[in-house]
Image 1 (cartoon, rainbow over the protein chains, first blue to last red):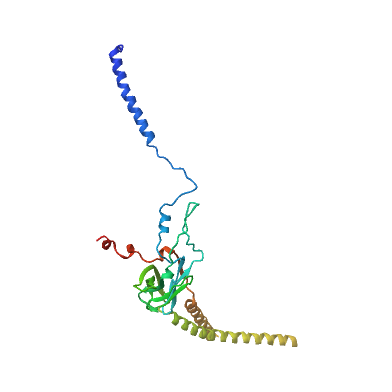
Image 2 (image 1 turned 90 degrees about the horizontal axis):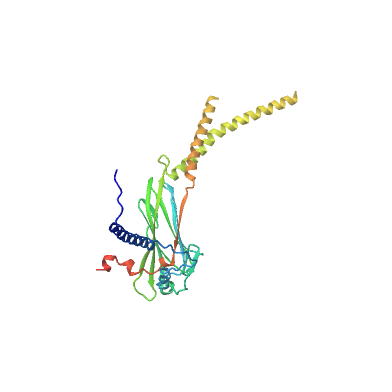
Length: 250
Length: 59
């Protein structure tokens, strides 16, 4: 059985000397952890948008209205039939050009800045172009319309498929700025929207052929079925009348 | 009577086929509509950043 020896003064001194650096090291770790805690910013009612407002204040000349671009096209067309693809560049009545920003319910309104009106310095044109292969398009060339303040511009193309299949195309809208003082015009592609059109036929019949055959068949079918049917009902009616007549006489 | 009913049946069959053709021929297909909002910032004169490609700008 091992005997426990009493601790000498030297041993006690060494043990205490080792404890002091350990405690120091522990306190250093604690301090480091305390300073490394992430501070969660408190949410205030007002927030500033440093990047948005200066950019609005230094805006170059532009068209001072919001617009809506509305594209309408047929999803499916019967072979041989024509349909319209229309593109309207309308003025948005709810458009607001005062620079404003809204962040999570808190509204920040910026200063009203002067934005030079492009209509005053340039002639503005809108150019529509339909790019689709395999379909007969009218008009085939670009459509150019003058863009005026508050006025809607509409483009329309008539398309006619000659064969069944899927056709994919692009509808382009360009803005053309021509300086009133003279000089080279500048173009800006405003949108290029993809459209998909499916051309269908019925057992190889085009839309027009199906309608004509349907109309002729309807007339022929009516003549074949309703004429004998009417005659049959006529005969039955005559018999009923005769029976009534004889019963009254009897 | 047999010839008479055959004629009626043929007439009805023709009517049915014709109706299918007419319905298909006049059926209005759905039109797609897509709306896009254009901001004034998109309707301004093109800047140098948009016109000149990066390689040319920094050459």
